Image (cartoon, rainbow, N blue to C red):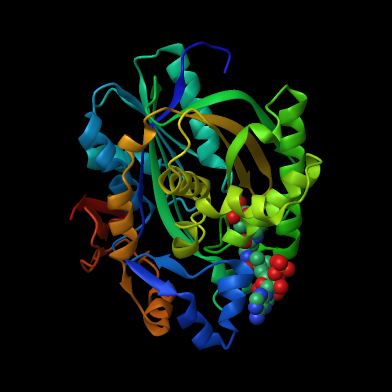
Length: 391
Ligand code: HMG
């Protein structure tokens, strides 16, 4: 950022769904060796939404603590990034704006580019704050990832939201330096408008992701970005947590660094604790990795961390952020621990019946059962409208 003004993430809050399906239960159903999930993919469980949860309820639940701590004043813009949108026209953030009781003189917009969207939202927010440092921008990443039942992708499902308040003089993280960018027109993962689940070329998607790591890093360095040795941790988009280790290996190779397994583990392992139990949360995933890093390490004051954001299709960005001294006093690890631990464990049959249902499309009045443990719920679908309320 070409300014002396520090701009970045002032506060960060995560939420997920009320239900969780362990991979051991998925393996019991489909006969897979559970080690494939636990070790091969690095996944232990996936969040599953109740009937009355979706990207809006998760997004509002994640953002509520930010509004409670900082107040609604000066929140001029809400950017909600998602690829599991609930409407083709209306921005999901408008429902969130209403649930949070934000002022009418607020700009609300939805951003989409697969899992990359929230990083574009972060850059948009930083630009707005640069123009007027009094502004506070709420950037929310919220997604439910669902693949076809009985497909290889099913083990990489998940759901979560990450809400960030972007301000001047931030308490947690200052965005710094150039961004390394990489875009390539590839069909590794996509979801046509008529489909509820994506189409995916699994192996090709891994290769496309790794190409993007290389491309984004090269672009970052070509603009005078910091050398590898200046970074104290790397947060990657984690469709499954093993992917972060593959990605870091690719980065080290591209940078011509010695492939030291111990360093690989040290740089990446502190970032995986949320993603391995929540699953792929698409836009939110890299910000869950960031939150885990900030919470799991206590030696990051003034240090630089790297973020690699990837969205299939594909667009990627590598950016550097400086952790603000005293950041630990502003973290929310207890609330995050509860959000993850309080989920109710379900069996495969319950998961399957939730997956096989869909919202009625007949335009009638359909009340939904109250199942969420969260502060907001989708209470009904009426006249083709989604009705949200405080739970
Ligand atoms: P698969 O065919 O089920 O699994 O597909 P596999 O046979 O490739 O095995 C996976 C790993 O487990 C392999 O390790 C195996 O060796 C290992 P690797 O070769 O990767 O190092 N394994 C075992 N390890 C220990 N004990 C065992 C065992 N068995 C096997 N017994 C795939 C895996 C990821 C392709 C599939 O789950 C899938 O299609 N997922 C969805 C796509 C995806 O996640 N792609 C990732 C990159 S693209 C991306 O990140 C973007 C995305 O988030 C979308 C967006 O941007 O919107 C997806």
